[in-house]
Image (cartoon, rainbow, N blue to C red):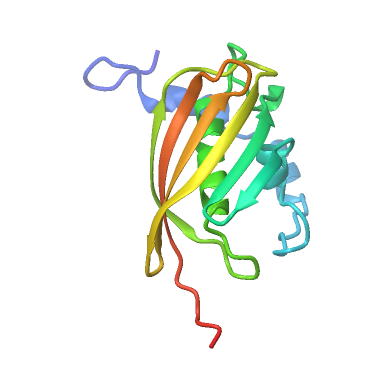
Amino acid sequence: MDQNEGGKPSMEKAKRPLELTDDESEAVSRLAVPPHRAGAGPSFYEYFALRGIQVDLVEPGLVVCTFKVPLHLSDRSGRLANGAIANLVDEVGGAVVHVEGLPMNVSVDMCISYMSTAKLHDELEITSRVLGQRGGYSGTIVLMRNKVTGEVIAEGRHSLFGRHASKL
């Protein structure tokens, strides 16, 4: 076993499985990945992370969505992965302050309380509300709960910033 001076396993051993062979490296270098153009449909990321989300209600300062936990966002134990929860807080929290025709705001800070877990195929209700806005700064709160039991899965506070030119 590779060990450093303190007798602990070194990072070299951890890096080995991630290294590419020359053939693998050459195959990857031949891949043609065209850049994604804004407005040309969903990106791979959006398709992967948000596929299946249903928007139920949109009002000024409020967005309500339904989302069924898919296999591709589940962890090894069949629960909605924490990273997927964070992504949904980011996306739905940003959607509530988005103005059509303007660039998306940039996330400044997120604080997420993970209260419970959601299992594969659970149906969730995701509610995002605007807490306040001042200048280009917005604060939102996102509540994710099991639609059947009402149990709170997570609550996230999301801060965003966007400096948009005046239309005047």
